[in-house]
Image (cartoon, rainbow over all chains, first blue to last red; front, top):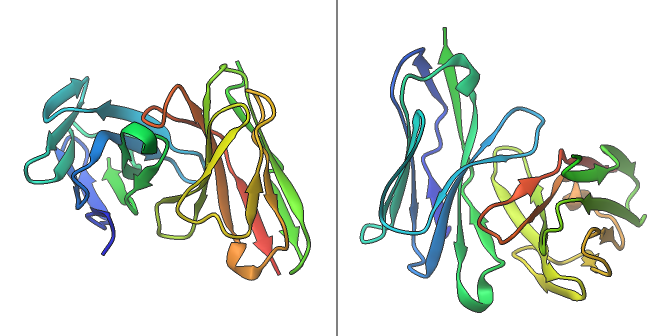
Length: 113
Length: 111
């Protein structure tokens, strides 16, 4: 079983829809939780990161972490065609293993005009 | 501001050949890492470094070597290329592993 499981998708939504992207994890030692966006043939770019349970908002994006359920989500409000990309969740350990990160397999989102 | 620069962008190798993928960053980040991304999959950590002279293995280190002699550079060496190493390789840097800046990738094919 993978340490990080991401809803596989793909997702296709109309412009303006609310999008929910989700990951579950098995290692309770993960301390940092990130979401990256990757456009086709490009490197990933960091959207949001958080280290505590709860919500963190940045414009149209909200990252949610529930450590008790080992579940993280990314919500996109008022989705735009420019949001069409692959979204990757990622997590890192702390302490002496702080350099090791684990990524989900990604969810490809298409927002149709 | 160049960020993270990877070269080459594309490379074709024959089985058994060796090569070095170059990675340089100009943000004075202590942390650098190498990932591979296979079709339909996320990124898997190959090696990482938390500072000059310090490297450690990630999830899939076999067949790859790294060294970190300066803060700016973190080359990845393929010792004897195998078809299983056909992938897209990404270099990343950051103040820590939680906020990474990625390069544009190197697409490698091993025949």
